[in-house]
Each structure stands twice: as structure tokens, then as C-alpha cells.
Image (cartoon, rainbow, N blue to C red):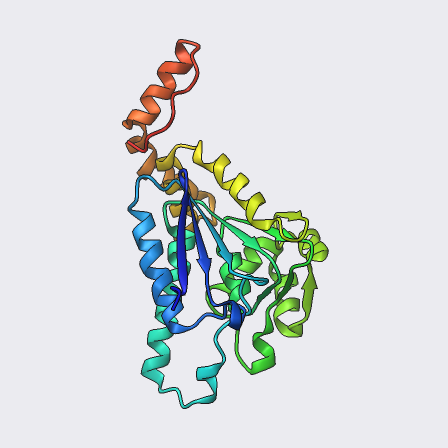
Length: 259
């Protein structure tokens, strides 16, 4: 059987593909655990400079796998599954690599949460988005209570959560729920192009910026505290020193190495 999360490297970009097309890439416990494993692996891989997250077949992710929802679910098992999902979200939001979502078809429920945890969302014109949690008597999960208001504001987020309505791609762009629209079937190619542009950035700078927002950078004091804690260390990196020397000597900036 094919692995539920596939990994493919293209230069310095790694594509993670949710691979359960027969279930519209619904998130099972096994898939969540594999996402944790592979995102943890990529976080420590210096050859990986950016990640693209996508789904096999016609859809990004139709939400959580509903098959276990018809069975008795003891509280301890539920907590363990939720904690695995939280590890995925923390790795996407606070991990050191920029992550681009390539969305075709459905991004529903937990699938929308997964996309919203990425740094940039490329959407097919035919993609559809819905926070369907209220339709099954649940609250938004996998960080959606935080990530979606970060994108579209609290008022619009509450409307989506309470109505559980489907949002078409054009409206998703107008709401700023997604960042870019492309023709059907072109989301992965466009996401790879965006990810390749991120490869040029200084890895340590990207990692520290993502960490700042993941930890909470909502006030001026938060921002200033992060600066004083992190910037002095970045002053000492070879990437910074070599870039300053190139600027001083009017030479091209050398490739950043993450050191």
C-alpha cells in the first residue's frame, strides 16, 4: 500500500503529499502521525529550504476521517489524536521552513485548518473551502480558531464558523483566506514557484520570524522583546556577515547557507 504521506524533493523544495485520494485525503490518525514524522524530519534537514503541502488526486483534504466517528471514542484516545494534530499545526506554523499550500478541490474542516496553518496558500479557481465543524456538532479545531482570524479577521471567521457555508475560490481570495488563484490543475506548479522564491531567503531569518509569530507577536512589547532576544544572535551569523560584506563591496549577495 502506498504511504499515506509522500515526500518528494525538487532541488531545495520538498513536496509533502497527502495520499489517500480515495477518501479525498481525509486526515486519519495514521496520516497525522506520518505528517508529524515527516515535518520533524524536514525541520532538521538543512538541504530542505521550503515545503509545499498538497493532496493527491482531485482534492487537497476533505477534513478528518469520519469512519472512526461512528465508533465509541474514549476520552484518552481522543486527546491523543488531538495532540498529534496539534503537533502537525505547531510544526507548520512554528517550524523553521516556509510552507506553501497547493489547494485543488476541497479544503473542508480540518483540511481548511491544515491549509490555514501554512504561510502561503495557492488555490485553484475550482477549489472550495468550508469550516464545516458546526454541521457535525463540533468547534473549529487544528488551530482554526487562531489561524483563520489571523487571515480574515475575527468577524468574518465567526461567520464562516457559525454558518459552515462553502466559500468558492474567488470569494476566498477576496476575503484573503487564500493568497493566489491559478487555473485548475496548476496549484502545485504555482506553489513550487512560490516555494523556490523562498529558497533564496536566509534560513535563520525565516526560522526566527516564524517562531516569533508562533510564540505570539501581538503587541509592541512582544515585537521588541523578540528583537532584543534574537537579533544579537543573528548579527553573529556567517549569512549576515557575508551579506553585509557583499553590500559594502557592491557585490552580489552570496547564497545564504543557514550558518
